Image (tube, rainbow, N blue to C red; front, side, top):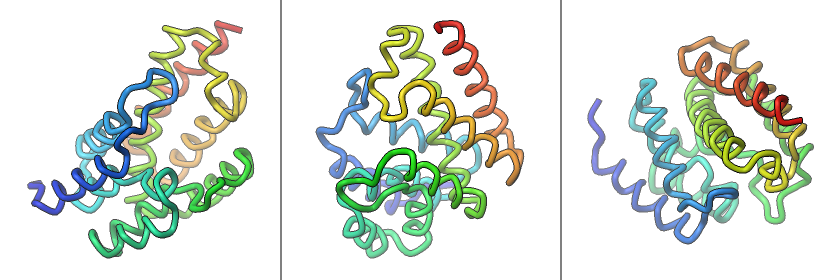
Length: 191
């Protein structure tokens, strides 16, 4: 598959939206996460709309809510906007309480399109890989950075994997499941 100038426009747009934003634990520029999620999605067969949505998957949630969603729709079309919306657990500021937000997202994930499931799986896989790295480096102090703490974070990622496994067991979902199992094992060994 060839990426067109539309993808590179989305890359520039995503970089601008997330400029100055950093990852919770390691402090890496947030764009590194967006690029990693996009690379994973492309590795597992994403088309251009899905790749663009991977770049923009956190834009509504983290960078302006509904207004950013409308801008995405205008710039990149309804298919990309629908995928990004499907990956979003909050479009308001301030965000609703963590647990309720996550439960609502999980309820919608079971009915999500294959494109949404692909981007969500790529996002969660990259997040879990980072959690594994950070847990090895920082130990249990890692969990203080997460609203759900240790228990909530582990619950959420396991629930995502279980829902995705019911929808369609793909090599990406299998890889996500293995990574979460490793995270659970490592987190339990540090108790």
